[in-house]
Amino acid sequence: MNIPLNKIFRKLSPYVPGEQPSEKNFIKLNTNENPFPVPKEVINAIREQIDGSIRKYPDPEAYGLRKAIGKHYGFDPGWIFAGNGSDEILRLCITAFSSKDDYVAFLHPSYPLYEVLATISDRKPCRVNLKSDFNIPDDFMNIYNLYMKIIANPDSPSGCFHPVDQIRDIAKKLRRVLVIDEAYADFSKDNCLNLVKDFENVIVVRTFSKSFSLAGMRIGYCFGNPRLISALLKIKDSYNLNTISQVAGISAINHYDVMMENCRKIIRNRDYLKGELEKIGFYVFPSSANFILVKPLHIKAEDLYKVLKEKRILVRYFGTPLLKDYLRITIGSKKEIKVLMSAIKEII
Image (cartoon, rainbow, N blue to C red):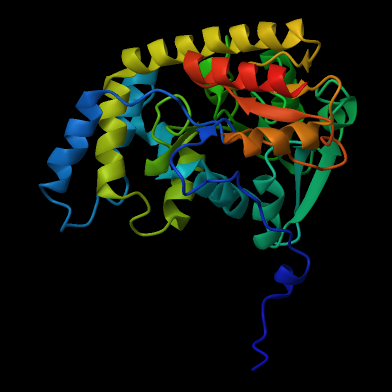
């Protein structure tokens, strides 16, 4: 039976996530997960909730979580939205702040899901290529100002941090909403959160997946002017964030100091891995995230990826024209990094 599909699917290239092997004996350095466990207090809070009221629907607006986030960062809950991972929030932003056939501009290479979300929302994706050093080009700064824009900062896969003053200049010129995706902000020395209060058209999106070690819980949140947050609340699913995720998020934000210590460990490991790879001739881009982008020496990136996989070490190879010479490596534990370095030295 020839069942008709939405015409959008004819031109859609789906987002391809990093490999998630079913076997347990892989060293996973390919999807930017946190190598450190969540605090035991968060686990206990989850267990208590499982034994408690999961038969009931969750708080539809996740007010308790929004209040906890707001208390930590100094925002009223009306400035905060919580969702089923930052991906849901990105999709809702495109739906709320642009219309059918509008352009949505984003940098490339960056998070590939931006293009997918724009396409399935019946918007026109507008890729703007980054400079060769992965910095923002002048045309993105100075034109496309009638388009909604999305910027990852720090960016992925480069790890590049775009200066706050540069982002501020974009927000100032833009006549639409600017979405700043700060999934990796806790690994950087700076962030764009203050721009939310300076500009009515700025939304800053964050996640519990990276720095809080809660990728499996799918907890995202964003900051924005209450008028923008109100729009997101109007169009979200009825119960978009489950009870256990809300409880985990509240407990995690209340143990922020533990998370930050884990982030500091990751930053130290990042610097260590960068130094070790540079010693053997790899080019390593400066990173403000929990990963590094590297160009191998004496071996093709794809070949190194394949041999490492045979040794049960996963790193990320994208294979696109702009990235075919590079690998992205998640910063793991010190033990994992030493195993990785030993394998690379053996291979080359």
